[in-house]
Image (cartoon, rainbow, N blue to C red):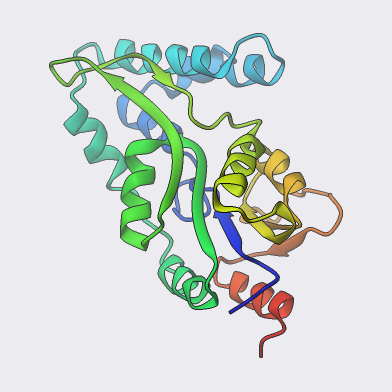
Length: 225
């Protein structure tokens, strides 16, 4: 048991999965990445010109337009569920469970993949954004915001309250500047630096280069050998 860390939340894309973005995976499959990037929706969202549900609507419209046909849920699932879970994740999750900490997945990615990853790893608390399908099981423009990529701390704070675990005993593991809000909300922020040329500078940040290194960070914090 570890009294210092009672809640550990993970980003999904690029942390628990090898793929850095489940949204990008869909764009690559349906050949809509170019139009989506040219529209500059990520920058518009960051600048407050559009909200996140509008960004999801524009992205799903681009995917449907590029496909030029109805897209069934089964095809979306086929693309997303083919993405690899990090091979180091099972052992890390097992170690965390042995410590007795609650584990959460909090991602700006897509819930279809998030639920699959959580089920495969045995993670009970799962938060990710939802695609919308019509009665025929076809993708329609839009989405349901569950996790705002710039405000992941909102989910963290709500979960902290529900579990009665203060954020002073919480850790968040992310891999990009999209996780900055979550990093700043917890006592133990952990940056998985997949790209050696990418940097995040905040106080008390733990930096690891592989997911398995998280176990050593936890051992140090918890005073374990």
